[in-house]
Length: 412
Image (cartoon, rainbow, N blue to C red; front, side, top):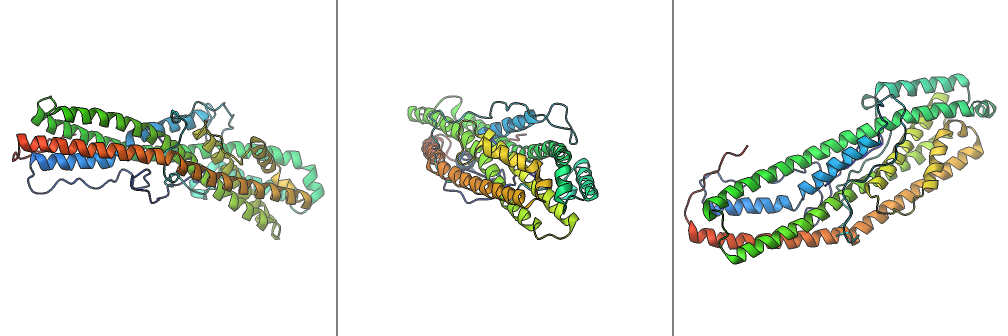
């Protein structure tokens, strides 16, 4: 089950990460598993079964099916969060968040490892011009012109006079950005789902080929009582691993979004520091708009991370603090002119950035100490049972058809 959000402006990009013995998280290469081990020379039924089962075992460990379910559920969640009938240039309304993708672990415990670093990890920042829709870019240019014309950058009195007018413009611009950011998250998540679907389809083809091979040897019956027992135990172990794999994907999504928010907020602090020494009015406005858009993206990534793990209370970040940051963004263009307000906004950004960074560390530690350990244990148990079942079947196949050649069926 699963995905990761991604929008070049407010979102996350895939990052590769070293994983433990068991591949918990894939990266851009997910789905690009080792090429088929089919040899160029003719192989026996025994060799073919071993090859197929080993390939299946590796692919199963990445739980592409449950992750795909989570990824598709996440896309639906993102789509339902968009304003009804809105387009890229429309104003969004905030509907109540729908139910989350997959349910958390039954025992509320998290398995093992480090939080999937394969989680989307990017920097929520204003996307470059080619990636942003023309309406948003035009609105940005128009905003620069209006502020220049109002001459508020170096005039506190004029800034105070125009405060509410500029605040209304900011709200409208942020509404336009919101749907654009969400759309980018959806696009990124669809790419993730496509990668998972490719891996899942490959696994299904391997299952089908293996079933046909076994059918030609067993004629629909188990060879031994021990084989039947191992097969039942393996099914149960796979089910446990799959459920945990879906939960891991949820944490992957949340972890990536949190990291994206943290990186973006570091940028916001840098942008805000550059405003003060800036002498050119247009440059000052541009820096302020960059700070606002980047911080807005971070807020959206953060909200999405919380939606991805609805049953987990992420510490260090409060609704009140998020509201304070959003308020600062709305009044940012006039507050930057007033030294006292400029300093206050700087403090708001700095504290928020530090808290989100703490939340990232907490999430990784929590994942490593709980969910990752559970998942690795479940995967090791399933892998060991799969190995025992493989050995049991190989003994039977060798006794029944030791030298029969394998003719690979055509599977679409």
